[in-house]
Image 1: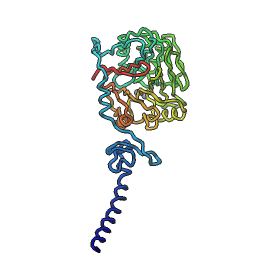
Image 2 (image 1 turned 90 degrees about the horizontal axis):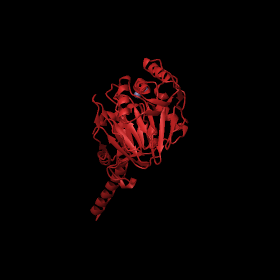
Image 3 (image 1 turned 90 degrees about the vertical axis):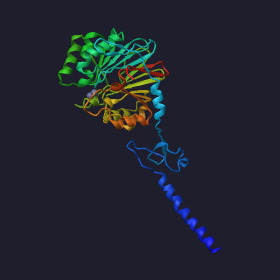
Image 4 (image 1 turned 60 degrees about the vertical axis):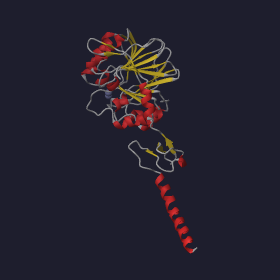
Length: 351
Ligand SMILES: [Zn+2]
Ligand SMILES: [Zn+2]
């Protein structure tokens, strides 16, 4: 009897020592580079499945952000790679999509940015024109897509990988309105742009937060620059949001955390289905707070061979964590997003 009592007591002590140990090990687990971790023990207690990826809010409560790699792969496989037209110079041209939809062509201009938007009513907006040596390609892309005139041209900021090719576009097409932020630069590339604007008899309208474009059938307005940023050219980037019925697109140029924070503080609705990732995927852009506000389903990175480490692996991880299907112009070529007002589909020139 005494022996039995001793062994029962021993079991009791053992249980007492095990239970708190297990609870103590349950949370917090090891946090990875993205700030979250997978649940190993006592997951049901926290409303999680074993192995489920999650974050902890500052008050200790659980915030689930499951990495659905398989779902994403499936979504991307659904993307069509249409038979594209290759120009005699080897440039792979995207196919013009049927009218009556909002179409966004993220042009493959190597390291740089150039995006053409065709509205459901057939108006065209060009955001940036890639580097100087990409100007001719941008003109070929646009001519291949049947562009005769540009209703709006936007120079997001004076850096060469954005405005370099715009002088060629200005010479090739009748441009109705030009927008740029109120910042100047001393490079020849920027002077070429200003000279072309003058030669074509045009003036530049100021792009800044609160300014809207006059475009039929879609809402298009600038969310940045919110402030003056002296000689920080990337911070001056004009950020445009386009909304067509239930779908929305955000074009960020090279806006970095500084500008992202100002947009957040401005209290505007940053939510967008498709995000053109800031500054070619640099780690200086796409802060956690910004991505949490945008909540993109799709992310586009306009990037080519570069020595800056674009896109940053941490940013790719961050996009993955919010389940954004990510496309890159260096991998998929020119990426076309087509919105019918409720759903968005993608076509790429490369697999
Ligand atoms: Zn820049
Ligand atoms: Zn850039």
